[in-house]
Length: 252
Picture (cartoon, rainbow, N blue to C red):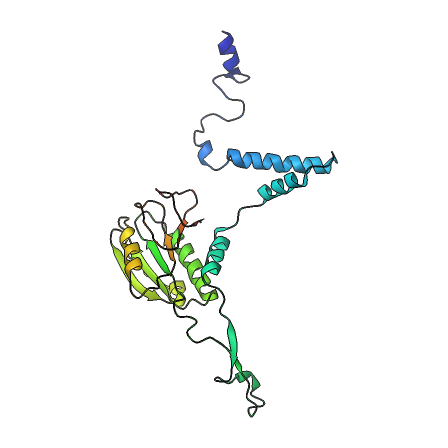
């Protein structure tokens, strides 16, 4: 009887005081928070209350750690931009008299140099995209990833991108300009998921630079991959790879 009395609430036996009944999908509606997020919120609120009520001084290292935990996570597009900056530094331009500047049309008799890039600076300035086009891939994910790749390629002066579609078999699209990727691209596949042949093709291709990085876009429902060069993954938020990745993972 003591055990039954302890299990009983103010609403009765078997009824909760906080969660309403007959809603088994409450935890699946993103209304709750994870345990780590709850702890971070509690620590940041405690620091705010402590400072507002002037309860004394705290160690500077502790305050810095709490403020660092309170910062929102870096968006995936910012992380992807840093990844592009690591491999594709901005091209330095020089002044050359080989091409006259058109800004001095009022004084055509005075030669004016023009800012141009180094000859051959764009050679080998490319990367490859392995796109998972299986039936489980979301079209919204494909559009966001390809749009970000096209915009960053244009901003980093990447003239061409090697694109390979892959579901049960691979479809090598060759080199494509960022403008074509941003405008309209026909995705082939929508079948199974086997990505390793596409990676082997790029690693053994003679027309692809040996130091060219790979960007693999998948939903995580793939086989175990073996990549022997610099690479990164783009995954939907909440999905995981079936293995421990060696390269960075950007979650959309």
